[in-house]
Length: 179
Image 1 (cartoon, one colour):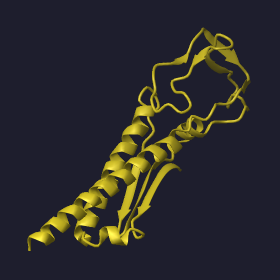
Image 2: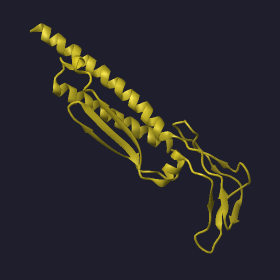
Image 3: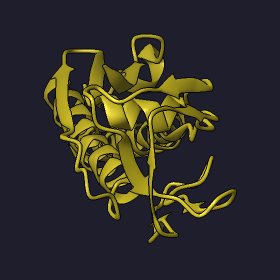
Image 4: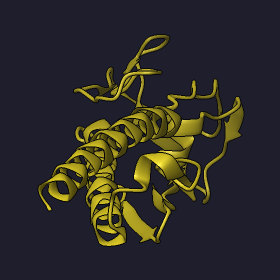
């Protein structure tokens, strides 16, 4: 599976959390992980938006007292080929008929994505239809979508978690001072 894995553990922040109730911590972590789930899925869908083939993305998460784990990804082979790239390889027809595809020579395909860019656009093959009994595919440069999504969403989630817990701590201290 090609997946984003985001996990944060706040067990090493005990002084910071002394004033915050366990219920507030769990509620905060659940909100943060759900936001990270939505953001991950949104980014995955954005990079495949212009594709004819639409990969299915799934998300699961777990929240406990001091940590959360989020996994978002797909088992889709085509997504994996684009995300992780492919080596040069030979493509042969599966039956007695030749391969059939548009081809206009070198530069006859406009990619719909680019390495390091979390977006997609129009593209695809150009040129007349061609028939071959085998071709040497040059390979595909890895786009690295998944690692970039994990890095961006993971950092946002951690910042959101600390900011929200800090607000909860201040709220708890103010309430304690009123008693």
